[in-house]
Amino acid sequence: MKPLVLAVALALAAPLPLNVAAAPATKTAPSAPAWVAHSNELAQILLQAQAPFQPEMTSFFGVPGYDDKVVDLGPNNTARYREALGKAREQLREKLQLERNPNVRQDLEIMIAAAERNIENSTLNEQHLMPWVDVPQVVFGGINGLLSDQVPEQRRGKALDRLKAYLGQAPGTQPLATLARQRYEEKSGTPNLLQPTKIEVDQALANVDTYIAGIGKLFAKYKIEGADASLAELSTQMKDYIAWTQKDVLPQARTDTRLPAELYAFQLKEVGVDINPSLLMQRAQLEYMETRAAMRQLAPLVVKEKGLKVADPNDYVAVIRALKQDKIGNDKLESHYRSVIDAIDPIIHKQGIVDVPQRPLQMRLGSEAESAASPAPHYLPAPLVGNTGQQGTFVLPMGNPASGEKAQYDDFNFGSAAWTLSAHEGRPGHDLQFAAMVERGISLARTLFAFNSVNVEGWALYAEAEMVPFEPLDGQMIALQFRLLRAARAMLDPMLNLGQTDREQARRVLIDGVGLSEAMATQELDRYTVRAPGQACSYFYGYTRIMELRMQTELALGDKFDRLAFNNFLLDQGLLPPDQLAAAVNEVFVPAQRKK
Image (tube, rainbow, N blue to C red):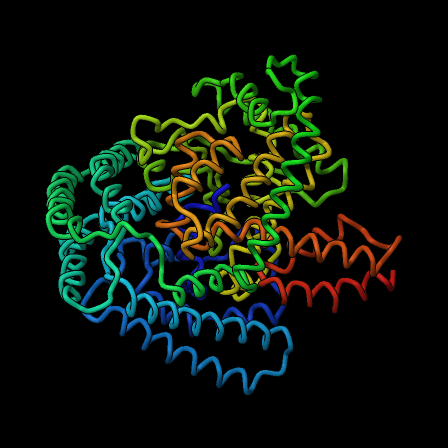
């Protein structure tokens, strides 16, 4: 339900610094057309500009040379970042003037727009927000990105080098905690800068021990030798940083989570929502009412088939809570999801929905530290560069530590939930889309630089909808519940950020209207207001744009419409924004199908 790990999603919203020329040839990707190879060469301009600023994300996606590097929080880092992007943008503009291939021209335009968008993002954040950083979470994310089954064994040893860089123990480095504190303190007293929210600061205070323990467990699991002294220093530095945060930052933290209108509008634009928030809310309200009505119609059928005991068979929330009583123990949860995942692929093939790779989907339960960092189901993509067969992984957290005593979820650990969640995070959702980027030879401009949550989450929700008719009735009920949640998100996220509702009213909608647990509702509310304001709107909006495009294509082609061909074509386009995706369908797919 959440698009990848939040850190990955946010980093992908900014172009990633991938040194493609240095990456080894992949075993899974086909040989790319000449124009793709040329486009990827030009991508070096922007990739190299960003490499020093986002090395963790660089190595996460498979680029060699950055495994021991860490985020740049040095003096004037934001100004240096914008300067580097500005120079890259001008070079790309010069290349555009000379380029004649229409595909490469489009890729250059995508990269120029990405550079401009990230310059604007950096500028707005500097104008409006105090630069406080949850350093323990950043360090855990950087180590977790290396110490993973998805990373080749020979690269994991670099985790100790990266840890030392975080601690200032590597040559030419300073402790990240020191740099983060310096960047905050140098802005102290600047008028009109918003402090971090009390919610996120409180969570940082509560999670520091979890992150420290999580890093230690990762070093032990992967048998990284010689880390004891650095791990001890990590504990000292992180606790000192959190003590300073509690003393100097927490007293100034804001309780009003709303963003300035200019900044929230940009947040929506950056994730790909290109309509006015008021129109988005109107569409979401209609979808919420229609989905709720459909759930009320389906509820009695589920009650009858499953033999549920509820006072009112039309009360869909009561039916969902009755389904949740079929709880699956943590020791059996992964095998249950595996059984559902194994059942989904044959359905996709038999129904001609989309082409599916001939390999099993990877899935596992999340650790306590992962749940603290990313407290919702998510997908960890495999390296997009230099991939030699690595696969992405669907990660299912067991709870939300931010919820305190009510930290455990009951939203995913019952039999009916596995169908739609597996379709979203696995196949035909995130796993298939990200695998296609590697296996179909799509250019970096159309994957990394074009990244927008509207495309990614829109495809995953569309994938859910493609599977619903072939699921059992109780699976269909939870699929509709999740769709109801996406409509609620597109209502509540703007309403909270524009001051049109409050947290308690939104919480009641999520618990009493959607049927979420207290822990999941807390995760949702934190997401709308603290973790990623605006991003949750992308699911509903992306889904509606794909469904509109699907209907337009069906009308244009009539009997010649081919669902398998249409869905494969969408994947072939990478992560284009809605308007560009629609143009590709109308200008390329439709004419080609008419000729058949």
